[in-house]
Each structure stands twice: as C-alpha cells, then as structure tokens.
Image (cartoon, rainbow, N blue to C red):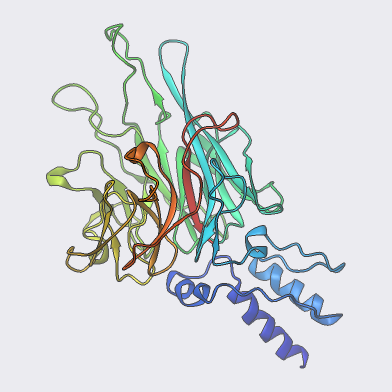
Length: 408
C-alpha cells in the first residue's frame, strides 16, 4: 500500500470513528457497532494515522504503543450495563448512545430570602471510563455528540463566557466570550453548532419578592433575553437574537418556567422552547435560527414531553407514558403504533431500542416513578434490560440523579 492509499484508508477508518457524524450517517455507520480496529502500523503509517487523528479530533495510538483512545471507544460493546450501580460509577451505554453525564439538584436558602438551585454533575472521565464528580464551579454542562468535548458555564449563572472542555484532558480548550450573559448551552445534533440562551438573571434562583407575604415561597421569574448560535469549530458567535419571556400575567405572577432554554430540532434546522403552559395545549414554541416564530417541522408535529423524541431514521416518535408503558407513534399521523415498557422515554439507542426510566415489570412492586431505573426497551418486544440500579441518592451526589445522554 503506498502513502496515498494509506492516507485514504486512514481517513475512511477515522470517518467511521468520527466524533460528530451527521444524524443520517450516524444511523448507518454507528449501528455497525463502531468496530474499533487496533492500528498496528509502523513507521510512516503511525505518523499518517496521527496526522489524520489530529485533523478529525480523534485520538490514536501514540508512538510508544499506548492506547490513548477515549474510554467510550475502548468499550465498544453493544450494551454496557451496571444494574448494581446508582448513581452509576462506570460507563453505561446501549447501541449508539451512552450516558455522558448525570446530575443531582440541591436547593439552598440564600441571604435575603432567595433560594438557589445548584447542580452537581457526574461527568464521564474518558481516560478511566468512570463518572467523576465535576468541579463545583461548573454550574452547567452539556456534552457534545461523540463525548470528546463538553460546553460548560461557570456559576453563579448567568455567565459571560462559554468553556469548551476537553473530556480527555479535563481542561478547557477554549473560552468563548459573549456580550449577553448566558445560563444554558446546547449542542446541535451533529455537534457543529451551539445554541446559548441568554438571561438577565439566574433562572435557577427563586426570588423573594420585596413586600411579599413572609409565608410565601420565593417566586419563579422570567428573565430570558434572547440567544446566540455559535459555530463550534471556530468559536464564532453569531448575532444576538432577542427572545424575551413573558414575565407578567393578568393575575400578577409568572406562569412559566424560569428556565426556558432553546433546544434543537432533530435535523438541527430549527430551535424550540419546551413550554410549561402553551396556548391551546401547545407543548413547544418553534423558531428559526434567526429567532423568527415558525411552524413545527412535520416530523416533530406530535412531539410532547419525552426527551427521546424522533428515532434516528425518523420513522418513530416517542410519546408520553406512565407506569403502564409509553406509546410509540407514527410521526406522520400521531397515531399509536405500539407501546413499550417504561414510564419516560429518554433517548434512542438505535432505530428500535430506547433508553427509558422504568421499573422491571417483575420487580416494580407498585412503587411507580419513585422506584425506577434506567432500562433498555425494544419496540415490538416486552424485553427489558436493566442498565442501572434503582435511582437513589448517595453521599457524593445528594438527591435523585438525572441522566444526560450523547451519541458515542
């Protein structure tokens, strides 16, 4: 094999292992189970592979033969489960999706009567394959597709800059400053962009209103001002788009959620806000990347609250469930196709399997949502595979933990 052929072959291999394949490509390629081949190429081959790896952001074998690939690549099994762990300590994954991080929430009384909600994150260490407690300074974390990087915000929110955290080294590779303070960031499905939601106040702080009755609890508030769309490769920040929340109602109090972040459509072409009280039962408000109100994409017309949403091939749509199971819909008509075990559908592992919160039907014991665990369920089957132990708190992570998933 000559050098040209070697480079071409290496590029093909690295593309298969790429950190951010497009959604359709990921479905075609990653379902092959991301077969990782040990590259035993000497001399010029090692140098070529190193150059290619640097170009696409994927670690390769170093000159001394040490395998420095991310831990999520070293464990390429179809299902990696730890049904004896809660909160999880070791990597959990199924199909194309992995548990990239999790968090617990704590509410703390503040001087002056306010109440502050803070998150404690368990973040996958790509060197060890274990979830490590993230530094307390990270008030917000969102992990990119491929799980090589994460976007982080320093507390107390809102923040004046966005950090791009390298999950291999544990160091911030780049800081992206913004003129309008932001309190939430979210990666696009292909990892090429970030949407950052700006707020004038911390949406995670409940405010004790001046003159309010002493017995009243601190109040939610709507302080969103707009958003940015950011190019992740260059760090270029787009034009600030104004999108304020409606803060007052005819009853004199705020009716929405304090945090109403912008999220991505499945194809990455539109943005939406999940609504607490949408008009006429509307679950989501949809916007263009320029902030103009628009119609929902046809494939997500019937999307409700479930985080899983549309399947990778766009043929199935996860819907709202309960202790008796969760419907899976035809996204074109909104009609139920089947029902799968699981109370809440969280993320698609592939086109037929979904990671969900739920109870093993044989072990649930009637305790419903207060005794649930991560499960892998399959469309058209009653098979249930436990991925974690039943959800509970620990000394390190006080409070019930919530998962954050990413494409692996």
